[in-house]
Image 1 (cartoon, rainbow, N blue to C red):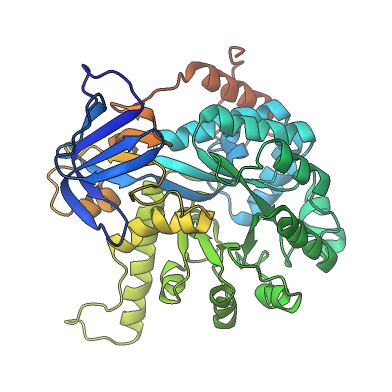
Image 2: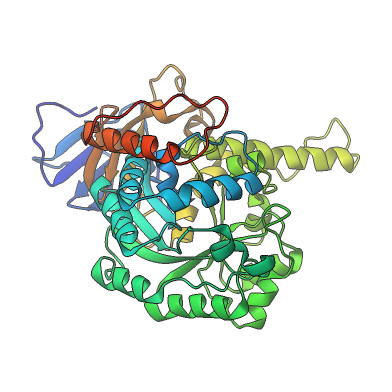
Length: 475
């Protein structure tokens, strides 16, 4: 809790929390202080002195690095929960072929701002925005401005338009798209907004890859990313219709296995393909709740970790599931342990012997924080509570009725806590949530996103169960 007698300064002292640094050298530190100066972590230790600092009393609370969401289509926040029962193939047909072409630039801005504010509220301090709604230059500008207005750390993954499935996903006769990402627009966004690779918002390229594009399109987009000096993030090996064996092999044969590429979902990679990810310096972003719910396949976090491949967690789409990191941690912890339990049963393991090789809560918290930062390409500045890194920090209320009493603080975060327990959120040294409430005013952004919802819903045939939309008050 903020001590009210303190004035706001460029120094913040978090006092007396249980600090789960995710720094291998610092470890887990009980009754520990953190001093923030400007945007950086200046000190971590006991009984720190900081005259004139704004003090946050974290005694009894758990302090963690901010969560990293490594893959979210943030523009879909305007149509949250419109498709709870959809499988992936239905999502393509209804969301990407009906809703997406109807989006105006103002809808993208409203969704990105509201979605990023949602992240801050839930303790997500970095968002990788996989933005495949670049229907016009105004759409691209609106997407960036929405992230800027929300004020959290972001990686803006510039993508392609979604104006029809045939043009942008499946191509003529489902033979692969012949449409390319707009290189001139990508260059403009890079130079106009995102030229600083250490800024609060940086840039990546959201590509479709060898299962959705002709080889010349794939090569153009990979080489565009190389020209711009940004990382690639691409969906691979998901569901039956979206899974083509040899995606990674095809990239290898084209000499396009770039380091630091993020392979999203990766549910059906073969052992040979996993080796290509590892040996090329790639990483994976997994959306366990969505992958289980929509039919992509299992979220293979344990497989990736066993190969030393960084794992990040993500929420993917607000149309169909919760978009917070607590949901993703619960889903990955349960599903990956369930798979091991089932394998042990099928292997005939003695029932009196515990299932071997189960993932742990500490692995899960790493995936949600420091390894997520590795996936996002920003682990040099965030993802752990480390001296000199950016101050992206979250305080979890340890006295809440669903968290207390705490025995294992990591288990308290991974297994017990939820969004309601996110007490304080600091991004880049700025307090964006204090005493359980966002600092930003929500009235204007909420009116905008509700007006966007009403407009977009009016453009498609309603689904059973949808509420009748009422006109929103103009923002």
